[in-house]
Amino acid sequence: AEPMTLTRPVFFVGFMGAGKTSVARRLARTCRVASVDMDTYIERREGCRVKDIFAASGEEGFRAIETEVLRELGAAEAPMLVSCGGGVVVTPENHGIFEDAGFVVYLQVTADEAASRISDTSTRPLFQNLEAARARIAERLPLYEAVADATVDTAGKSVPAIAREVQRVL
Ligand code: S3P
Image 1 (cartoon, rainbow, N blue to C red):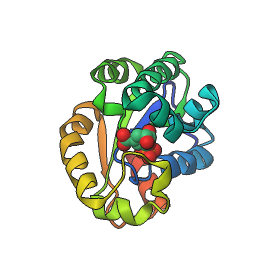
Image 2 (image 1 turned 90 degrees about the vertical axis):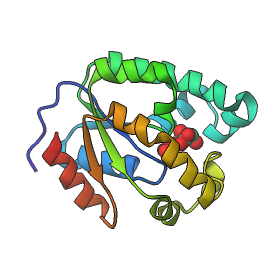
Image 3 (image 1 turned 180 degrees about the horizontal axis):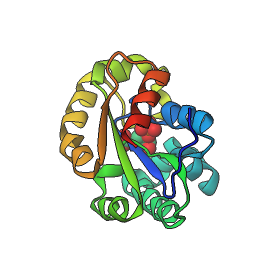
């Protein structure tokens, strides 16, 4: 693959299990661009796991940290592939940050496929069961669509196949 000539960050959004982290990593390798996983970045910054932030400070506490981190990454104006947490779109303020900071790719996934890709739900406080996941995806759908500059359907596709499609829309 050709190295990408990115000048600003590309953000991956979509539900848990959409493949945001795997696709960002894969593209980063083939295109020789840095990748940043927001949840991992938050865990290093806070010195604790996402699920423990939820336990200690609730979703509200987690969302506040998430917005600070999104703002920092956006302000960097550096070429990098950022995999966001699935709920990054629920904070209205984040929509403005996306608008200013770079290009947003929405990876679409169904609840069933997401569940089949997620092996360990213990690290994901907001993925409890299939019914709840379906409802949450439906609720977030307009929010993902609102921030997306491009949308890629991941149904039945491998990580390399999704990464190739993303390259085509960048
Ligand atoms: C969340 C998704 C998670 C993580 C947190 C909340 C959500 O990220 O940020 O558990 O609200 O959908 P992944 O999408 O990387 O699992």
